[in-house]
Length: 439
Image (cartoon, rainbow, N blue to C red; front, top):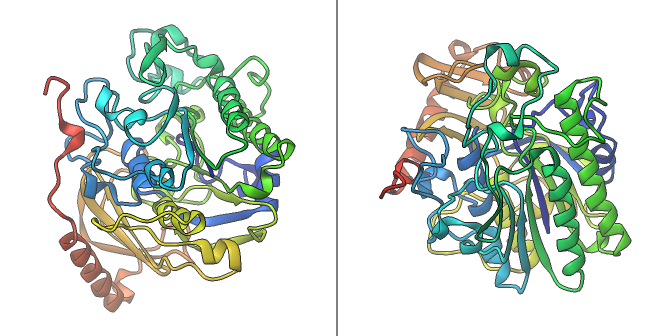
């Protein structure tokens, strides 16, 4: 089992999802050989809660991994994913899987919250976003955002690179992070080729600041952002080729996705949500609908899936496929997608709730999506309560342009009841993101 999770990659940033200038031949082939899901959602529109949702199969509001006070964990945060949460890695360890993470963690950087305390035997990567621990330089202020050729300096970001619980490089040389992540991932696969394994590969890119190795820098017609995505595509190609060479491709399910939509406020240094509305930080489609591919040659039927799915669903799906036991002492928000993946069935997911900053903004049921709160589409400033609920029919209006609430008052009332029922299901929890480091 391999999960490749990009950072801030938009729905419209891959060739197989319609991008005309970013070349992604390896992901395009992966989509042809596997299943491309066009209506696949993450648990939140920003890094920390999205990752918590993927690894636990629970909306992050249940674990305290979304906060009204701040969006994500920072270097001065004292909290992290509670050890009482059961991760994909811990679940698969029940079945004897070797477990490793290569890349960005962002679920707590203090010793008690590191991946090695959450079911991962090996860890190589950075503990939080690559723009944190900023020490100087122009950063991504207005001038840099408008310069498509602006290239940052690693010296301006004192981000640590870690192996297990030890810092091995600071600042991390981000020019070569994607390259080194790939090498570490390949080594993990080679070392564990005779055992069942779970590899979680959450890339640092294309979150700003953007860095690419010499082989890819300056090569894409899309500019630096394109360079970064094309290097990520090559990384995927190297991993899939390693599986083929070791004759593991028929035994390994690979999932490719992104933690949220594109960071639009960074202009050419950010990605594209294609026809979807808005991007990162918002609960519009561009913030939480992400490009997703499942690949397992000989087992997963190649096709395009237009039904609903979510990273939340990996927990139940992987449990079924691996024979692992799901936790029974907590509420899970995970649906088993194995019937779609393996037998051509239909997705059991019929609804999706949209949370950000510990606030419930929207719900989707079938083709209908109802918003009761919203953020400004580009800079995702403070959320506001809408004067009246807004209703969109996503099958007919993928861009959420045409509010049809007045034409369908019955649907509005039905979805408002759904929101109330969901709020009532949320148990009391501690705000893990708001804990100061001194606590």
